[in-house]
Image 1 (tube, rainbow, N blue to C red):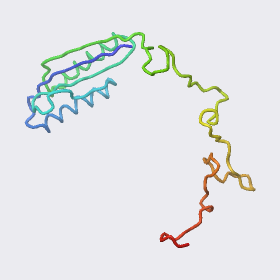
Image 2 (image 1 turned 90 degrees about the vertical axis):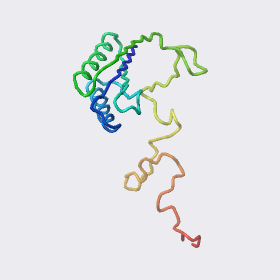
Image 3 (image 1 turned 135 degrees about the horizontal axis):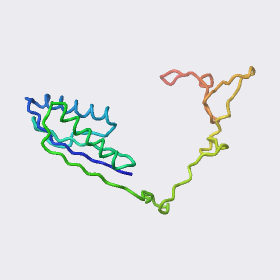
Image 4 (image 1 turned 180 degrees about the horizontal axis):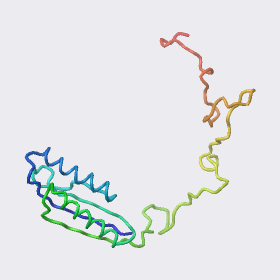
Length: 166
């Protein structure tokens, strides 16, 4: 697994207020998320009108692809003309052997067996029998979706006075 992180520092010369700045930042972040399928956020200079620090992250199985995506984001931000790029930092990390367990009770690399086989039902997993439906004399289900005994049908509940009088 390869994770790339890009940090861009921008100067937004046309911003006269935080509202102007946030309009530009939102446009840059939304565009990057939509075009490049990355995570993106404003990560610094939050209360400074004419500066913004943005962070982007991409995950893939090849470093070349991650590098290409983050380079395209840089070119795209520069090409927008909304802000001037003053600093760019890029880090690419490789993660191998992610089988290390963080759950106590499972040795390294082991996972609990949660695989469903063809015969598995909710009864096997949770003790709920989904096939147990009451039927009327005509054969239609009278309580679809009610898997447990003890469910009350609307007609089974006695109507009572809200004041406690029956």
